[in-house]
Image 1: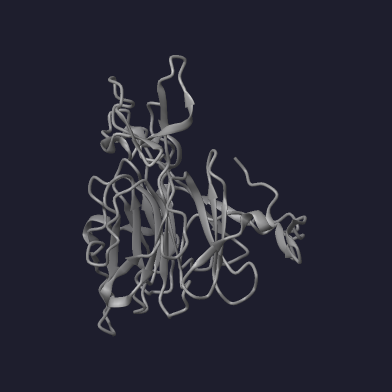
Image 2: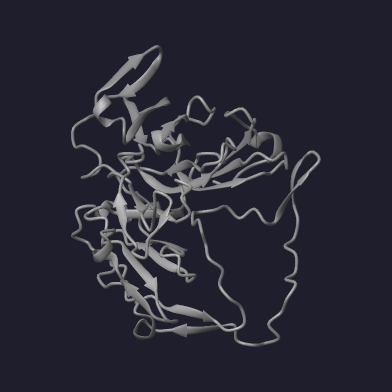
Length: 354
């Protein structure tokens, strides 16, 4: 395994185009090469870009010395959560948006085994690290996914951080508080207050107003939780309930029984599993309500890679595409317009990727 930190990040400065503010940052699925046909979704080539660079250099590499961004993503073999390097939890996350309302995009990075980092943009290309000053380091949590989103509709961007197997964090931006604008950027961690301090194999959150009530709801994508120490040395107990076999309850976060397989001696076999995704409805000051099952979202275990809100059928209601890993199929949830969804991937796709 690599024993050295990865290189310092670099910033690429746009020469011929301005970078627009990214208000919400989350993982997405590449769907731009697909269009909805009358009988489903068909594949078409990407359209040629409307503008060309004519050979001109569009980006210039800027060093950490120039920008002040010196974040290092290490490989720490001794970290107590080093098992999280496997699969979807290994990489850092980055979200960009104007947090202090000065018209310049800022950078928030979740750094896995190290603290989060918040860089406010000053005079271009300089950024200032204000992580500790503003109390958004995340402590010992292993950050995996970041969203900058105005969840409370007060006019500023808040920060939602997905952490691996520890409570997710919600940093509420108080630069606008009670309708009044302040000149001081402040954050308060309030995930528990709003019901978003979820402990799971969280990967990333995707926000959208799926019920069109004027505030942003949240889909939480999950992947897998890896048991510390790996599989237990002693055999795991198996029990039966209504014809279904289960591993002992204390192991159900990590494993399930292969219902139709047996070992050479007829013994039960168990294998690692993913985690269920979660849908939360934004109920304003009352916080977020878990409506996963009631809304028709799968409550089974899957390995989530990405989730994208998009109105694929142009009916004015946000639909949801979930890209899953391994043997979990992808899902296309059609918004029924009544707070529920119908999974319709088989109506539109011949197959989805493994």
